Amino acid sequence: MRRTAADPEIGDWLERTAPLALQCQQCGECAAVCPSQRHGGIRPAELMARVAAGAGWPNEDSLWLCARCMSCSERCPSGADPGEVIALLRERAAGRGQLPAYLREEAQRFFKTGLSFPRTGMTRKLRKELGLPVGEISEKALTECSEIVRRTGLGRFVRE
Ligand code: SF4
Ligand code: SF4
Image (cartoon, rainbow, N blue to C red; front, side, top):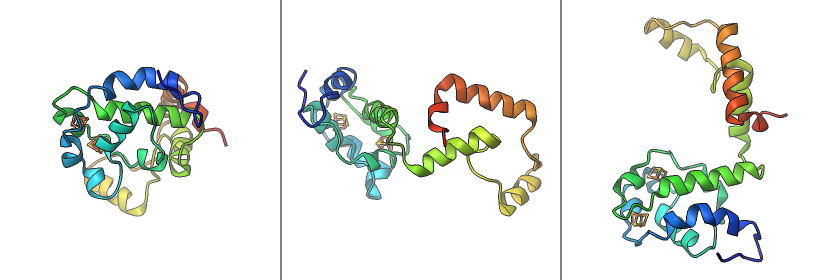
């Protein structure tokens, strides 16, 4: 497996992603269906070409613009699974502490309140209209959230 001088760890990581990326035929189907690419976000076909060449993906910010809709993987005629490759790239970036601040804040909020997003006046109103609870999360549910954070390893992202 090729290693680059710029990123000596990339060889180990490529052992997980390359078997998928090397199946890519560069047909462009994933690019055609990707809602993120349509709005200037991630470019799955280009990413697959770079990963297959052992070049990694320089634009790590765009990784977090993937909507995880998995349309790319569903439409891929080669079984290359770009959605999974992007997930592995994210995992690697997060493991190196390269998680965008807004996602870190989201993880911290979930840890403390059980909610990814704060409840606003509007969301409280809508929940009331839908007959959903508008109060705070119960202690029991919060404990379960903490357990999820612990078991999934999300805890490393909630450190202040
Ligand atoms: S759809 Fe599959 S084969 Fe086609 S460019 Fe995307 S990843 Fe490659
Ligand atoms: S999973 Fe990500 S890369 Fe694939 S089509 Fe959806 S937004 Fe695009």
